[in-house]
Length: 84
Image 1 (spheres, one colour):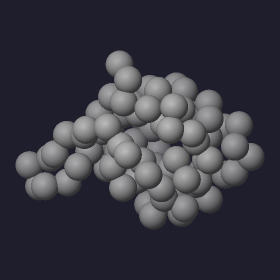
Image 2: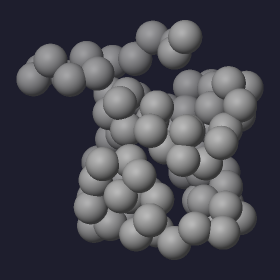
Image 3: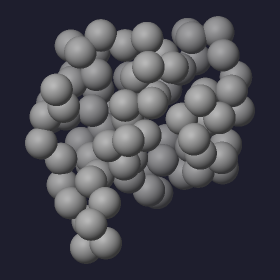
Image 4: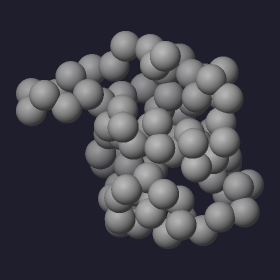
């Protein structure tokens, strides 16, 4: 079960507490390309880079797909996406 997230004015659930450096490290060590990771998450590579650069927030559905793609445990997911 995912921790609470923020609901945007458009009704989308988003998370804005991401530890981007930890996420990038996890992605770099995954052995997958950014293009492959983005595709598995249902977004373009450009969208993924905007999120990794902090220009856009991740939707909860994107976090779920990203965690599946990177085989993250619940603890890893919570540490990267939900703990300050």
